Image (cartoon, rainbow, N blue to C red):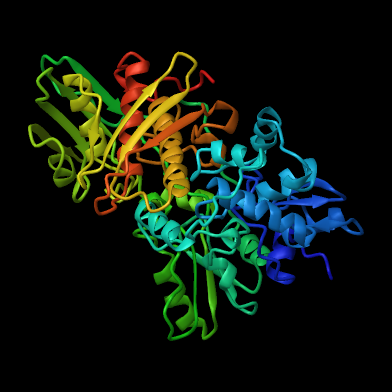
Length: 498
């Protein structure tokens, strides 16, 4: 094969059709989704030139012994260690390099957490992955259809639960594209460049790899004037779903959805990828794959609307929020006593499709001011959380019939992880012109595996109609973290301290 400068990941995926290695940071070498073994040692394929590994043994997840691959898939399913399943193939490859198979014996938590420093998982909150590596036993007689129904409630889009999902076979858009499809990427001016290969498209686009800034997170709003018992300002934060937006389309056809086995926390609700794929396929008379880079998703993807609020001990107050369709109604659903002022600011787009956007902030503010300890979500789900002296979390959730406790626990742990990051560490620097400067996946402040505390989840199954419970847990853990951090007037409260 002639050397055209392609990465090992492109050769594996586009030219050999091996789709288990995923492109999550596209290509920054920071998320671990494309991890493969080179002569038995883990390496990220997206930043490895294919020419550098000529004559060496390359092993993807597909190339692991079937019994090893299946054992890890079963362990991840039993522990709830996979939700969308995009990051897990790379994680399994790295864990398999440590001890081969879960049948070889459990891995120690410290060893797993060290290995996971090379990876990013946004869904699971890490602890379930540690459980899988420790050899979580399968639940006898488990109903995976019921588990899938619970996952669908929590993820907001149809989702499946099963060993194939842990192996990355959840039907991601770019995994299903025809081998002969043209590739479209965005150049630095926002135009689309179309070529025969990803390498050629990126060369023609001429974009420069995005970077992170050393500047602190930006707070676009000031707290309202007044005498308040509590005030809070939140920063811009990135949804940070792992699969960058992708779609493909046949000429005259219907574009493949950028949503596969997961809802991207609402971040892809308005993705441009399907419309661009349809237009370019019609223009070129051939199937076209549209691929957004990580930088594209950060610049173009909607953020959670930042707020600045003041509140009194009786729960009344004023909340200023970046103007976002639907946010006033979202806040009113849980806190009709708050006066809402929408404000126009320069910055990335915002959306109430983000997890709990608007109502979670309002519910946390009112609960903190009135010294309540339970969050009630707009759908009626209830959650309570507390943080022990050792940092571990206790979470209680009531959201109707559990359907599957493994999946519900997994989503609650994942929501706890996201909430802790939201309150304590996540944030973007956005300049006065509204341009985002934190463009690498490691610059968002997402908690690493070794920074994530243990989480104990108690499920109160009251037998009622099941509803999403993890969003209530998200708000409840945010409340607990904010209390533990002294009700600091700005989130993130600890950026740069870990």
